[in-house]
Length: 246
Picture 1 (cartoon, rainbow, N blue to C red):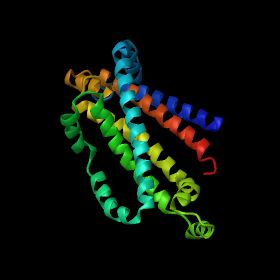
Picture 2 (spheres, rainbow, N blue to C red; picture 1 turned 180 degrees about the vertical axis):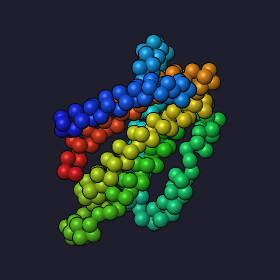
Picture 3 (cartoon, rainbow, N blue to C red; picture 1 turned 60 degrees about the vertical axis):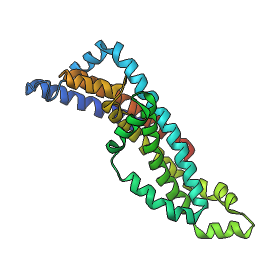
Picture 4 (cartoon, one colour; picture 1 turned 120 degrees about the vertical axis):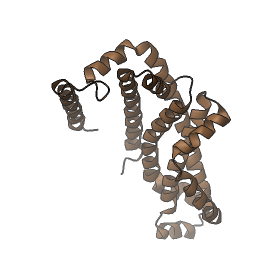
């Protein structure tokens, strides 16, 4: 990434935080409306002994589910790209299931798999898998027919077409799905933790709300945001190296 872009991003963040701090203090806003960034940072630092294990659990659940969902999503997309009749039957069902909000599935996951990490990993894999699958399938099926005809004229079968033409052509779409899924993975993890968990930032936020500890709520949100930004940045950096021609 260009160094000037990074510097502009840092400058923008500093200006935003400064304006936030000034506005809260100038207008004397109560903490339950909007606490100052300095107070949030102080709370996060003083409560790091509890926030760090919670952050580690949330990151573990999000990353594990993300990895499983990404593999399953790409694998299913490759399978349906090879089998057009199967794609015509299954794709409407997949789209229908994906259209239901994640909050509707979370209670079922907690009921079936308990309040431990497994239910969160499964939920993240479920949601990420759908996102990656739809993007990957779009890329795998949106290939120049002339290129397909050319390879077939040289005797290439369906598997050869998949590995040498469809998959490379679909990499930008797959990368987009993987990048979008980083945000969805964190959201799903936090929502499922809020509904039922033993540890995690989502559970920390839920408990802090019950205790009316707004600074703790914002401190947990801050830590979750940092994890999400790092996750997104790593995936974006890998995308720039793998899909370098984009």
